[in-house]
Length: 335
Image (cartoon, rainbow, N blue to C red):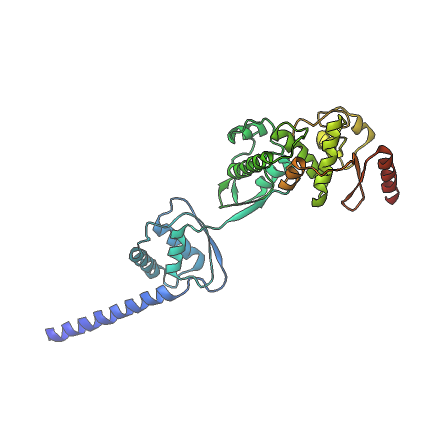
């Protein structure tokens, strides 16, 4: 009788172990996600059990308690139970438990992007940071000068100091960290371009080059025209002529600009009104791209001193005031 009972128990245990082994294999091989990818955001410091419970809440395990156990056993077998990293992950359709553990242990978190276009002002840049839901906001209510101090910058005005580009970052990255990237890249680009500048320019510092580049950036979106417009401004500076460029007037008008420049605006004395001041304005007026910086430091040769818009984004260039006035009248007739 005892022998029969022992045999029966062994059979039961054998069947149970076989079932457990088959269920474990089912767990390992069966995809966690079968319909569409999901995003999983793992908080910093989350313990292993909490991560697996979060996964269950998002995908729904077939056998929650058993599958939780299998996950722990698998993680211990793979040596990954204490290796899972915080962050935001995209889990693709068909991912298996083992692939899930490998993904989270790799730290290959999702990357987001924010783009600062050429010609943007610092005000526009700050607004883009505020509305980006993937960034951690730390600069709300902080003034521009304080931001520069946090960046370790010696400048007192932020305009033009950030390179226009697309920056990649992980979710919960701070707005200050993104600004730091853009600031450092502008310093790097400006340093490289300044080191290779043409000779005989009336620009004495890299910052002056940045100021003039910002004006060139705002004057035209046509890449081929940037060196030509830069050449006009360089010749005017060399001759002691005022720059007389509308984008600086608009920048100086601030919030009062409503889409039109009036005669009184051209006559108003502001630090940025280049119809009234000699030389360059005190700061950049926007974020210049690398092409605009390069154009200012390698201006096109020529004799033009004036230009006027053609109405299609390009410009008409003139060497004399009479030629320029004719071009202006032609433009006004088109309108």
